Image (cartoon, rainbow, N blue to C red; front, side, top):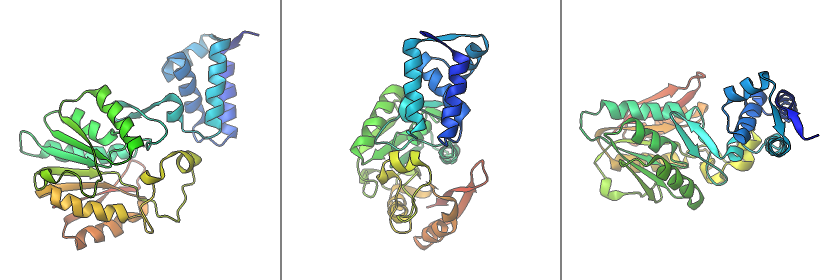
Length: 287
């Protein structure tokens, strides 16, 4: 048989992914089929309703993609793309896949940048990974200057590809360690933002997509999860001008510890913010 009804292929894929424990089997099935066929989710649904059929090549490519997802390989590694705010980013092995909850962290940084009185506000994203936050800042606040810092060679390759694709003249990508990056900018920045590794060493992530595929350097932050936050607190204080803002992503239960750590380092007005699911997700503080 050389032709397969798209509706049946979709239903089979949903069943396979559901049995494998994938949290969103319908969405993932439609996105994988769409990836193979060059269609949006809506396009896949419309073609299924219209009775479209798949040729053998497309059917085999869908089957392979579904098998990979059923083995809990991240959807974004299979499609090679991740949506983040208004951007579509290239991602794959070696780089942390950006999450929807980090969009709030970017929003806090964007709102702060937009409120700066200067005609050319300046921000830095420390540990940029795929470049998601930095690229959002540079594209959504085009009059700002934005630096992005990453020290993992594998992640840096993805960030560089994304920077090239977006081609934003106000973004500069730098290969460096966030603890000592860009001393020439000290005292001159308005916003420092970071989604650092913050999982404590003993806490193994439940989802196989995270546990097996996200790079460990992007996940684990030492014994209590806050080692990188400590380094960030020190570095950000040097980088920011007086009155500048630090924006940090963290786990739901870390808000109080991070506020205490920042207060001890001399930060003012530390405040924790909730994401759309009502979980504590980010803490801001003033230099």
